[in-house]
Every structure is written in structure tokens, then in C-alpha cells.
Length: 242
Image 1 (cartoon, one colour):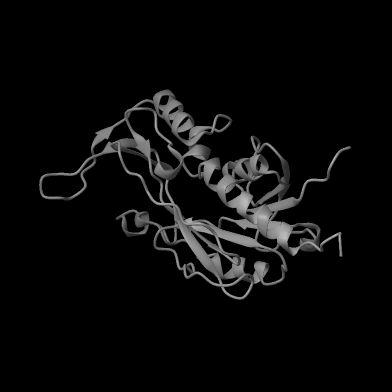
Image 2: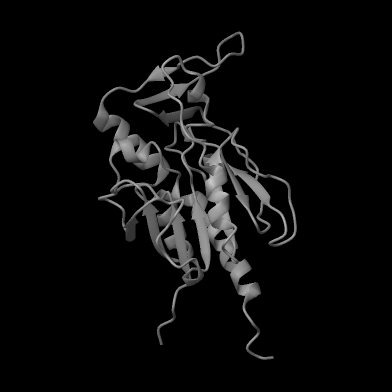
């Protein structure tokens, strides 16, 4: 007998890094993004994610990853452009939703991180690739991200062991500490094919192009949170024995 999967809505889905993790956790996923996403692997709706043309009541869980450029360290670069902060508009969407939700963004974004009871205030965690052994034997992916939710989530501990490799913008590089304790550029990795091979290997993403994958989160993050969201949904369902 077939069972109906719970439905997840992925706002600002990009090419589907978070969506893939939610799918692996057990959700039937629909993604929404204002840009075309030709390699998105699930049902896709091209639309403004701050005003999705969908009935939110049809979903059991909402994931939202509003653009991070307004809060990332890149905003202080000499050639930085001003970017809109879409977190407030995202909150407006989630305020209309009665189920569990998550907002994901970079360290430094104004997300709520304090633990709190279900659906009353936000709780939050920070995830890192080292928590999920995302490495290739010589370098590890860390890619710290913060996650605000209206349900309580587990907070694993970082396990930084190997030298770190970073993917951002048009760059892939290993990063090292200088003698003075400051982070230098480390070793640049050149060649699009070489960079793409590494990002696919370390992030667990094999269907994206470079410009898509270096903006994504590893599916391991959303799978970890998605399984906890499913537990929350299970607790909210009526007990059929009563």
C-alpha cells in the first residue's frame, strides 16, 4: 500500500541543494524561485518567493533561504553592490503558515537563535560540514550556516579536523592561518572543471553547474533538519487510537 509523503515548500530554492536534503528526509518537495532553474530536480514554480502563488495550507513544512548577500562578509568588499534584505518579507510569508518552518542564512544574518517551545518563539542552530563528515580525505567543507525555526532542533558540535576548503563567488581555495593569526587567501584552485569536481565531491551535489553549486547548501544540512521537522509534524497529527 502506498503512503502519501508530507509536502515541503522550498522558497528561494535555487538549483535545489536544500530541496534534495528534504527529499531524502522523506518530503515531496516543491521549489519556488524568481529565476529559472533548469536543473532543479523536483516540481518547480518560477515566481517571487515572497509572494508564492500557492496555497500554503497544502504544505506540511516550509523551508526558506532568502538571498544572503545583504548579510555575508562580501558586503564589505570594495566592489560590493547593495542587496535587498528579504528576511522581513520571508517572515511575512511564514506568519501566514501554521506548520513548522525554517529560515536559513549566513552567519551574521539577523535570525533568532534562542531555544523556545514549539510554535511560540524561534529556536535556532548553526550547522557545519564537519558535523556531517563532508571531506575528501585532505580538506573539509565547513560552510557554517544558521537556521531559525519555530520548533526545537538539535545542535550538533563542529568537528574541525582537516584543513578547510572554501567555495564562494568565482573562487575555490584552501585557506590557512598566517603566523600572525590572520586568515590569508591560501591556495587558489584554478580551472572550472577542477573546482566543480571538488564542490560536487565535498557538498554531495552532482547535478549543478559551478555558479549554482557554490551558492547552495549541502543536502546533508536540510536532510538533518527535515527529519526533525517530520518528527514535529508527527507529534502534531491527531492520535488515531483516540
